[in-house]
Image 1 (cartoon, helix red, strand yellow):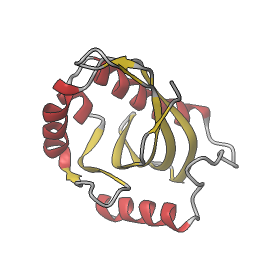
Image 2 (cartoon, one colour):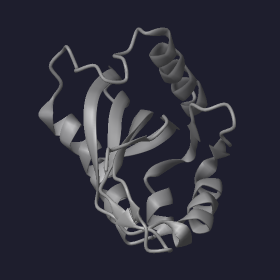
Image 3 (cartoon, one colour):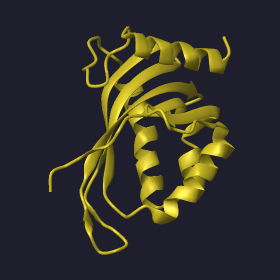
Length: 166
């Protein structure tokens, strides 16, 4: 089975509802080491985001991974180089803020393929014009694959951000 096929199957299963929904809790037991390995990838991602390190951000994805959103006008980024270019372009305007990823659900399709529902949580920040920007939450769905000892993102789809009340 090719990586692209595995990602497509994972995304289709998620969209059809056979995978846990965006805010569902995992119903079956999952090995804590698997969950921790997946969380470690997202923790490294948030550190790279805080440091505005586009190359480190892109390394969270598999070489043939892709990144997009669930809104009609989203551009799908294909491959690490395209994903890194997206971060290079976007990071300079990104305000400094605390971020963390909460894994809402992890479901293994195989020992090396996981479906992940999570939320990127962001604290408030000061905009370039001195205006306080609210914190918020951005749900995501990811297909992750194990590469040696590390879990990599094969595909992500980001939902719309929900801002916290000010």
